Image 1 (cartoon, rainbow, N blue to C red):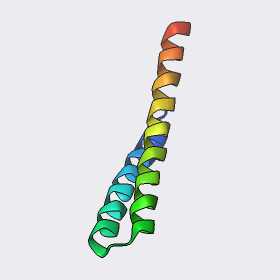
Image 2 (image 1 turned 60 degrees about the vertical axis):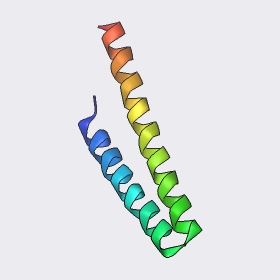
Image 3 (image 1 turned 180 degrees about the vertical axis):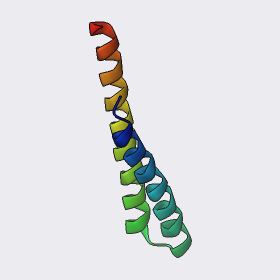
Image 4 (image 1 turned 120 degrees about the vertical axis):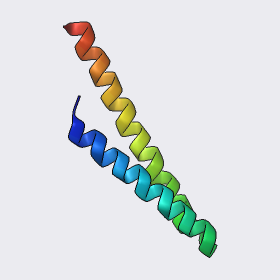
Length: 60
């Protein structure tokens, strides 16, 4: 498990949520979409790390 990647992904997820809310409040669809994209990217990183962990467990 790469804890640094998980921390970065969590930070990106939080940043994305904030950006999405700002986009919603200001009525800026570009900010809202970019915030959602950051959240998806963070989820992909978490999923990748989970798969790596499971593969490592299977090998060990």
